[in-house]
Length: 287
Ligand code: A3P
Image (cartoon, rainbow, N blue to C red; front, side):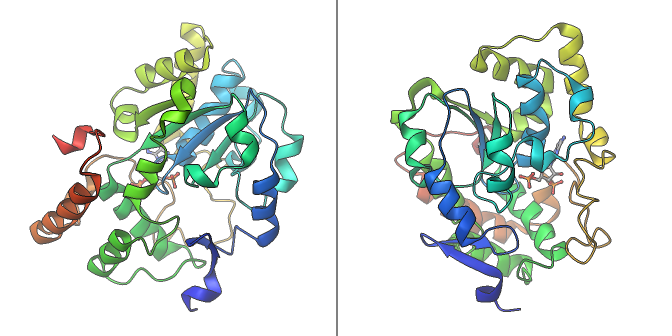
């Protein structure tokens, strides 16, 4: 299928028609943000599903039993997706909401609210590799072509939700002040206990040591991969073909090294560095 049949154009961004509609985007624009809403914002393939697992548990006092029978996309719905109008208004507060949109496209009520944001960044090379495999398994996305071709699309922003650099920069808006916390996927991988303690402090919440252990255990890659409420096995095979790639595929940092040639790495790094020039945004993978 041609790209135009698969994607909607929303303010110049490509969004899959399979999960977005004109109605859901109108709903997004009029959405009434509450002060105690918490958003997890990510560029695609940077840990959204992980945050859909984590955030509701941090906000519900670590009550793992209450999420056992609810799919991740209903625990922390996407603000912009077709299910939003169905689930978001019914979700009890404090609500966990995820989004891939850039800062300036948030609903106007967000800017007047005190709602908090946890922004998760992942090494763009790993987000790209994850997305490449996702495009191969998801029938509602365009075939990614070769990795080299996909890298060109990624660097020119002709991919879902636009350029990685624009996304990252858009959310570094000083207007947000202490309403936003930045964390990386890699920090979460390295020490999930510490990452969750930082999130709890940011949210002004506490969990007992036992509850925190329970949440960490529930949110490990291994346990999420075998949890049908989180591993996308409920999605029909002709939509997401798990024989081509698992949705929860590897869950590691640095898989790009198994995919990028030195030439592709040099080209990718040069473009990203050029576009991040003049900002003071630094990531562990830049060192
Ligand atoms: P890989 O394809 O590299 O394995 P998103 O949810 O934003 O679409 O991101 C998906 C990526 O996050 C996938 O990366 C997936 O495996 C990874 N992921 C999801 N849950 C994870 C967890 N608990 N631990 C580590 N990585 C996780």
